[in-house]
Image 1 (cartoon, rainbow, N blue to C red):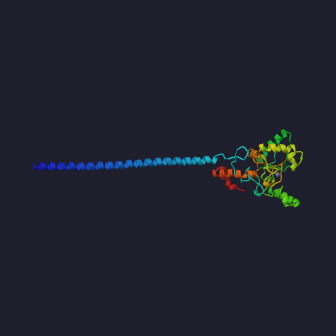
Image 2: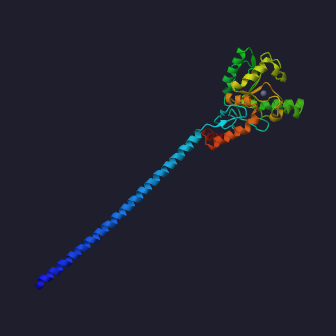
Image 3: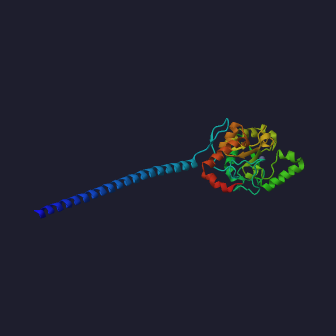
Length: 298
Ligand SMILES: [Zn+2]
């Protein structure tokens, strides 16, 4: 009986022991389960946050890329809005480069390709930048169709040729007078190959203010802009351009800007601050055409 009681007491302890082990195991399992569940939650939250961040970065990259190619516009007072050229206007190869008494081009600068245009010229060395050959031919053909025979009187001039011209004028007329109709070397648009002095084939009023009253001069004044040429030294703007009225001197800037200048009545000098704003916008937008160009400044 005693031994039976003892056996019974031992059995109870074993049961209790097993129950205790079971409880401990259950507690551990519960703890591990809870721990792994919260870790899983944390990983999921991190993954969601990462996905949000990745999306934001992708959106920002897309915005930057879109800005690079975004069109930039220019509206001169009284003129239609135009899209600006995607180039650095401080580069002498730009069609919008400003060369005047204050802004020079390197004496070594020569346009990439000079050609003898297929239009009447006053001498066989009247070369122009290849860029303006077709617009020039088109303009002369349109003038011809309207009964106006035109001729290129002067075109590309190297800086050394400009120097000899300018020095000659200074010697004969004095510096002050010469500066009103002739440019110092490095300050002439003719060095760009984008400027031409146009006259009647008859040479009536050749390089004289009276050219403005001739039928040919009037035709040019009313039509040149549609072919991309702007009258650079208009009457009444002498204080701005620094040059006497030259109804024969036209500069190629492309039809868009030439038309905007024509409509607004502004010279390139007067439009320059607006053009510079457009250039700064292109730089801010990281337009690749200007970023690449930055190494090639004059
Ligand atoms: Zn000229």
